[in-house]
Image (tube, rainbow, N blue to C red; front, side, top):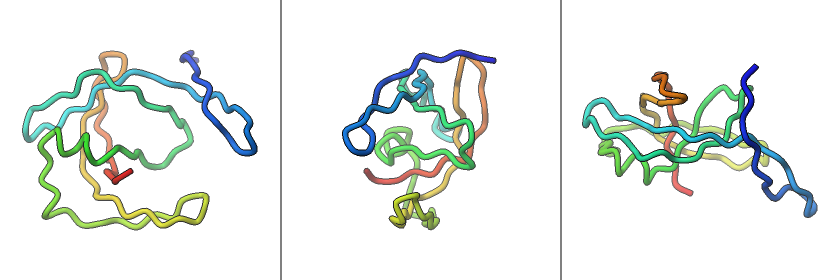
Length: 104
């Protein structure tokens, strides 16, 4: 099993939660733009991947033709991200992911 470094993040009621943090690069194949290494939290049980919309803008994604997708978060908040296929580089291995880009 792979081992990743963990970072302490604030949790509920002032508690600290440890989460795995890795460096990845994202590629948008249509523009051939590649991000510098960025930190991402691993959620091995996640069904979807979320990415900040500003990264998508930098990659050159045209958001005007993309439709919103609705998600309900654990806190019952409704998220309305746009979806796009991106290439994720992790440990120098490319993985095609369906990423949901949203505003902070």
